[in-house]
Length: 89
Image 1 (tube, rainbow, N blue to C red):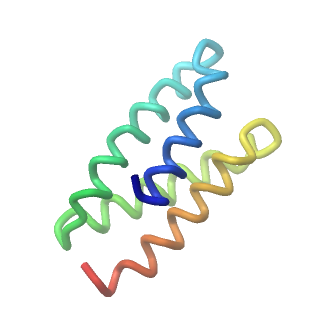
Image 2: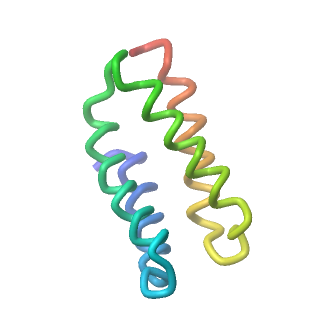
């Protein structure tokens, strides 16, 4: 399992505690599951959509950083990893 996949799984684990409180949490968990697959299949065609989704998730998570600090930190890490990966794709 890659470091990025570990980070995504940590996000899913942290968010799972809140899935009964908000529909958006369930959607976020689904998006993280999709992200795991997308990361495995990075292409020039899907790269911009993936990084845009991660950036949106990061921005959306910031107001909840007191509740989901690991998710916020991991999204920032994933975003930076993708930015560094851009030249390789």
